[in-house]
Length: 94
Image 1 (cartoon, rainbow, N blue to C red):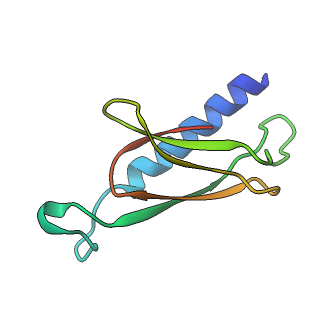
Image 2 (image 1 turned 30 degrees about the horizontal axis):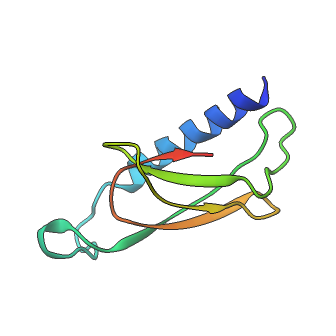
């Protein structure tokens, strides 16, 4: 598996995790109309072939409706990342 496929698979796995994380629960901190508030997208990126962390990889959160970049961050040397974003649905690009 090449690097492009590894990144694509990691992105898919993160997106799958986000889809579950976006489901609201009673008592969630939301503003009027269910809007407002922020959440953190936390994860780790690693090469699927070697299992080594991808250090300093760019993580972008794109709006699910129009693919505009909303926010982003960079993974740490251990491959972990933590990106804060407003509540919503996003595509993740690594």
